[in-house]
Image 1 (cartoon, rainbow, N blue to C red):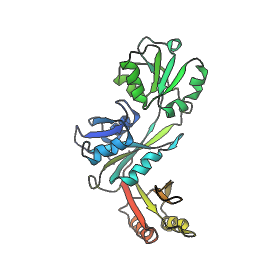
Image 2 (spheres, one colour; image 1 turned 90 degrees about the vertical axis):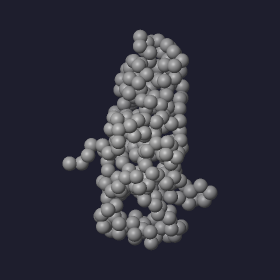
Image 3 (cartoon, one colour; image 1 turned 90 degrees about the horizontal axis):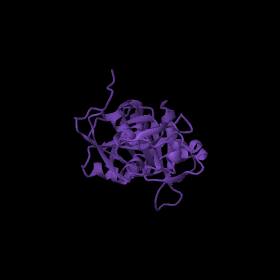
Image 4 (cartoon, rainbow, N blue to C red; image 1 turned 30 degrees about the horizontal axis):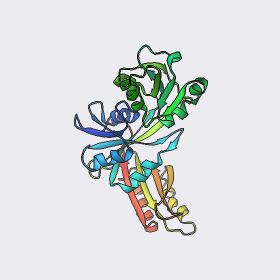
Length: 281
């Protein structure tokens, strides 16, 4: 029977972007268990650096949302840093309107949240025509802000965890426009910290600009019946019109098929890096 979480000692410090109560913290608990020690970071670069500089053992980052698409900054950071993907999970994103206890919907004059959350709740927000919508750096951080400033005429859009952490009240739950709102998260660690292998493998590679070269590169997986579940291209800084390609493979790197495909790809690609082979929780 597959383990329900990634085995780490109790109190293991896990870095994530945002404040306590963020969706990334919830994803971390799903991967590592509830006994992890959360380390809140301001930005995604800070999350990567926390692990690289050994301030945290692992990190959790969002990589893709079913509505908003890929988080491009994190794809770029994966290529630049030497961290390895050690696990993946996904969360159903449920947005809630959160305020001080006793505050009701007619009392609210301002609503704070991350721009993506505001966009995903446009249905409700469009009906609140006299309410000012204010973009904030983080969903959970917006709850913390109205709590600390004692803003009785304001609310925030964030998770149920954020309401619990800051002892605030959910004025209205499930306010997102589309219930099919899921986010994928990667867990990251320094290379060699965990045994490689699992349901999925993620790689990044670069190619010379030659006719048919991308077709040839992808064919190495088709020839071995390896399913590609995602392909993402990102521009290379300082090299106009040149790209890196990120692939998610439904394959374990320990399998002969995957090893042979990667060996074949390296014959075609001047740059090829395995970002991780990992379980899914």
